[in-house]
Image (tube, rainbow, N blue to C red):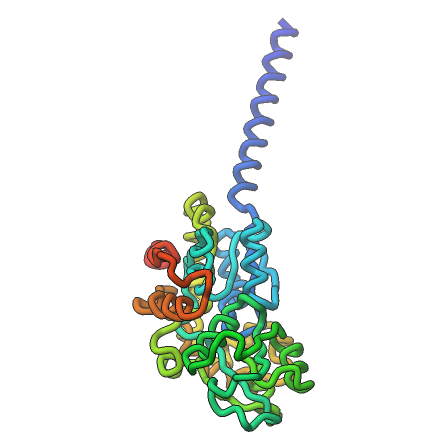
Length: 338
């Protein structure tokens, strides 16, 4: 009898421990870390990524999200394809470019409807007055194969320049971009805030092409250019619908915060080192460019066609390829946000 009772007791304990272990495993799976690489999270164009974190919106959704910083979007893209991260905060045009290479990734939340980029010209080179003057010059971009590279080459092509007329070199952003221009390694370059304001304020550069607003982007590129987004491999999204929805919830709430608060209020939520010693300049730049962000994360209707037109103009990857734009983005999750 004692033996039977002991066996029953042991079986009950074992069942309890197994149940507890299963519950723990389920809980762990529910809170598995999602790693997102940002193509320079101090850049104002990618502001929603860090802002969502500081506002606590990831945690509110029960997500464990880690943001990693990478200076160039093309390098972040490579990390995604290698399986090192689950998502990228970068330009949507990578989704189109990658499909041409047989890789399927999609934007699940569209942050912006304008690139938020400008072409800066060094004050040492007043002879550069239009993209047609890029001939024989060296133009700075964040990385080769990056969105800034796409746009720079498109502008050169649109201005009538041939392949080889202009050289693009990767100089990153912020301090490395500024140093390259100061040392005349580049005569012009495409960059974002707060780098723009820093160089214009010192008089070391002036704005040649402005794509910080929807209106100026249409003038420069001929249409809306959806830029900053959260993109992920389509296979991952299909297998993790719940996590994708929670990410969309957090980011759409962040976009609504941006659209309902002043630049000064938003700046207070950002890390102080993002100001680069000039908080007023950071706020002014954000106030001027805040209109680039979508209010709801929805892809602008005419945007993907503009992207395809830009890439088809010069990209060897995309030129002549059949691209299914409907597979480069989804509105499923943003439209389900309550």
